[in-house]
Structure formats: C-alpha cells, structure tokens
Image 1 (cartoon, one colour):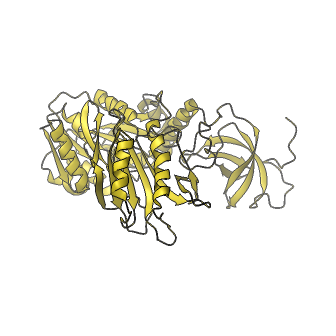
Image 2 (tube, helix red, strand yellow; image 1 turned 90 degrees about the vertical axis):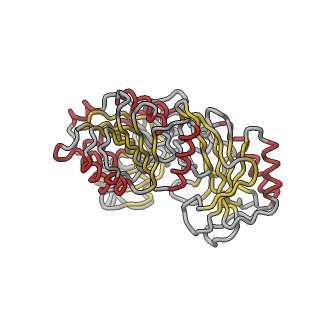
Image 3 (cartoon, helix red, strand yellow; image 1 turned 180 degrees about the vertical axis):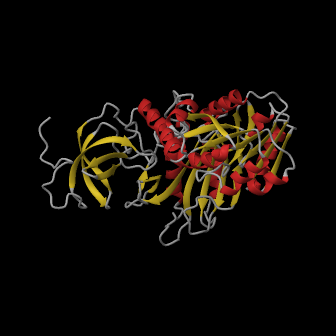
Length: 470
C-alpha cells in the first residue's frame, strides 16, 4: 500500500487536527455496543458507522468534541478480514441494521465482548469471575437472515408522489424505501410491496409528522413462524380511510395466509408507534402461533420476541440450568402474554405472572386457558407493588424487563422477599450489569452463570440470561 498523503494519528503538523469536516485516516480497532466502529486519531476517539475492526479508512469528521468525534466513512483503504458484502442493497443507508457488512461469526464475538466489558466495567465483576460465569459462547443460529416475525414500517410520500414504507436512515427521519428486507421473514415481502401499491391506488392521505396532518402513519406486519398466519395492521391518525373495509376484504382474498386486517388509531403527536385503540376490520384480530410446544394468540400490538427460534433456544437453556423438580413456586415478573410463564408452569408447582399492562394479562390468561394450564395465576400491577403482596417466598423469580432494566424499587423488593434463585433475561448488557451489581452487593446473591443468545443478527443488540443463587 502506498504511503497516505493524509496525516497519521501521531502527526503534529496540523495546527488543529480535530476540525469538523476534516478528512483523517484511522484504523478501526473495535466495535461499540451501538454498532459503530471505533478508532483513534492522536488522543481523539473516533466513532465511524459502517466500519468493522481491522478496516483502515478515510473518515470525514462530522462532529468534534474535546475527547471524541463522530465521522462518516469516506474511503475504505484496507479491508478487514471480518468485512463481507452486505445482503441488502440499501444496507449503507437504512438504519434497521448496523452490521450487514460484518461476518456473522465476528458479530457473535463482538457481542460476547460487549457482555464481558459490561460485566467488568459496570457490574464490577473481576476478569476471573467473568471467565467463570460466562460458561457458554453466545448462541448463534444458522438462520441469521429472514428471522424477524414482525416488522413495523413508517410510511411516507416520495418526491414523485409514490407511497413509500421502510426504515429511517440512521439518526434521521429520512425514509429508506423498501420492497423487501433480508432480516424479516421472507413471506412478508410480497405483502409489503403490494400493500403500498394498493394504498397509492386508494389515494389514502399519508401522515406528515411535521404538520401533524394526513392519516396513514405506519404499516405493521406480523407472522407466526410455525403457523404461517399473517396479520396486517394500518396505524393511522384518526381512522378516516375511505374504502378500507372493501380493501381489507380484498387483501384477505389475495393473501391466503393473511388472517386479519386491523386498524390502530394513534392521534398523538409522538414517536410512539401504536395508539391505545385497535379495531379489527376484516378476519381475526389475532394470529395463532406455536411456541415451545404451546398455542399462543398474538394481536397486532402484542409484545412477543421477534426471533421465535432464538427465544425457544434460550428457554431450553433456562430449563436446563434451573433443573426444575416440579415442586417450585415461580414468579415471572414482566410476564407479558405468558411467553415464558406458561412453558415453565408445566414444570413447577405454581407459576405467578406479574405485568403492568392489563391487556397483556388478558392475553396471558387466555393463552393459559388455550393450553389448559391450571397452575398459573396472572396479576396486573407493578412488580415492586405486587411482589411483597403475594404473601409467599418464591423459589424462583424470573425477570425480563425492558431495555432500561429494573427500577431500583424492584431490585429492593426482590432482596426483601429473598427467593432462592433469580433468572434475569436482558436485551441490554449495560443495564443488566448495573442491576446484577445491586443484586450481588453485600453478598445477597451470587452470579452463577450468564448465557448470551443472538436474538438480533445483523444488529449490535444482544440478549442474555443471567442466573443468580443465594
């Protein structure tokens, strides 16, 4: 390789080597937990999307602070051994995936390292401890494309007046139009492309988020991986879509696997996708799915793990680690619709699910009845208020909180009732490590094992289950 004409990280010739718009040459030495590549220019840490460890690149600085900068990839000078050709033609524009250009085995290694770094730096666990508790490598899956069972796309109008749906370009609200997506279940692709054409033909007004006018905000597609049943939901501002009933009936005839067309109304000027009201326009308001050998009903706005196969694999790890004997009392906090509660209930004496959303509890109860699970009880309320009121000491508490982790009050309530074992399922290593530190302080609990699983291939997100014992 010829010598670069651009300054090296050790250059002292520039009066100000850290200026916005400047072109610099760096080597990417790591990946961040948000998916960006990271390198150094002198003392400056530089974050660069669309790069991977081992790349040598020219970077245009976009934002410069005192100790770090963000940049945009300008030229790839040397290609990393971990770089591959993306499976998506708009991977460099679309914000849906960060790692289409990263070899899958290196994706797994980077995610494993995310967890190690979080446990050591945030959790305060020593390196030997981490080596001991991270007992298994991250679970990867042969199907690292086409795995998502749900996709929700914002809708927009192009400069030529065409209806578009896709994902936003990273850090913008500029829509990247898609007719297919390599990480979604491929059976959803025809629906995405052709529904847009029908919306255009119907001339339904598309929502303008700046003016808060128009109607159609998002398209939501959901599929049962095991059953193949599909659900289509149009998310609108007020619900005024002329001819919707007729069009919904046509969609049901056109797509044999489509079992329902729903309308969700969200009148708020917000980034939250779903509103409180959902109407079934044609067919059913739910699809049927099989998970861990059980029957589930999933509605348009139901939370369900987007990677069915990975969730089942992690559940198997949980069952193996817990070695259930059939006489345990299990409390599933943040139980949702009973995704983990119901399969685990079959192997314990009593299972209790706690969830703050009443609609989810309604579905969890229904799913319990569908599977004739009679040793389970579901309660509506916050975990910190319900746990102390149960009047019992569970053998196992299962935590599966949102990305923000558990509120401190939840962790204190758990330490107060003193269950023998805790399983903490997390989709964000940083908040997991923070909460594990609180649970393990003063010797209340010992972290016995952490098992990562790759629920989100082609992205920087990683799921894992942590097992704690008293």
